[in-house]
Structure formats: C-alpha cells, structure tokens
Image (cartoon, rainbow, N blue to C red; front, side):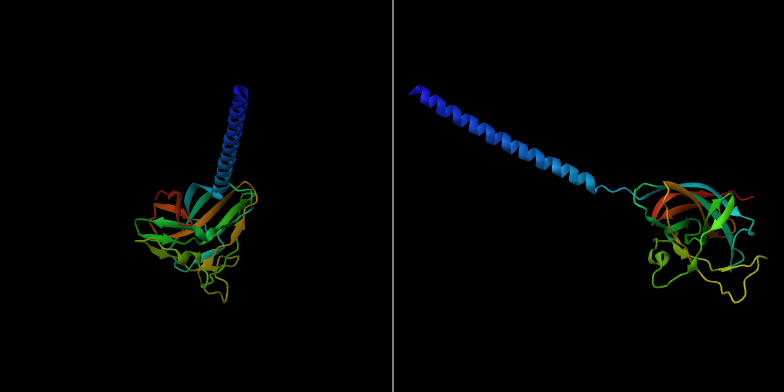
Length: 212
C-alpha cells in the first residue's frame, strides 16, 4: 500500500516538473522573440555628415551661375557624406541650410558640385516648383528664410540672353558608394565669418572663414 502511494506521488511530482519546464521554455522563447523584434526596429540615420573646409569663392570663372544681387558672395562648404545603409537612398541637397546667427538668417544653398580629376562638376539645378518646396516648408523660430536668385552664364561669364534670374532647386543624388565628397554653395553677405550647417533641420557642423 505504501509502495503504491509512493509511486502515485512520484508520478505527480514528475508531471508537475514537466509542466513547469514547458512553461519556462515558452517564456524564454517569447522573451527571445521580443528581443529580436526590438533589435529589428532600431533604425540608423541613412547618412553621416562631416563638415570640412569652408572658403569664400573669389574666382567665379568655374561657377556656372551668378547672383542677381551683385553684393552677395559665394560661401563653399565641403561636406563629407558616409552612407550607413545598404540600401541606395537618395540625398536631397535642398535639405542643407546655413544658419547665420549674427544676421538671423536661414540660408538656402545655391549650387552643389563634386571634383572629378580636380575639376568642378556642378550638378544640374532646376527652377523651384512652388507646389513642392522643401526649403519654404521648413522654418526656424527667430530666423528669416533667405534665398538668392541666380542666372546661368555663357563662356565669357556674361548672362545668357533671354534668361531671367530665378531661385533654383538642387538635384537629388543617389550615393551608391560608401562615401562621397560634395561642395555646397551658399549666398552670403559681405563680412560673413561663421554659421551652422543643418541637414533636414538637424545641426551637422559649422562653417567658419577668416576675413582678410
């Protein structure tokens, strides 16, 4: 009689242990799934930017446009772009802006180029479509949006006939390599020395030049 009771108690103990282990395994699997799900939802920024040297462009012969306002200068900022994603995503150069705190201006870029065999290769620009304007859709409190009209020139550096000055929209570019260097032009006023560079309304660095 005692042996039968012992066997029954032993079987109950084993059944309880198996059920406990089964629940524990299920909990572990569910926890692991939640970890994997969380890791998959972490998203990196598609690009990393580093701001390089900035200069006031004094030689305009290699610049295929001129400002309608002759008093404006061209500030050229080198931007080193690193692609973080394996997916080829386009980068919109219209999202770059220059914040001039001394003048309280948020400045739109006027041109962008890269170097090929040490020669400037400007990306084509187009007249802004007022129905979709990345620059005007964004504002920064306390700063006035500033954009400059430009016009194309001929090989003598003179304005082409029947060309009206207008505000241009920069081209989107798909960066297929892991990294690339571009140079962005900004219209600045005489005496510019310092400004912050933003991309998509996020600060990515600063630009500084010396006045001679």
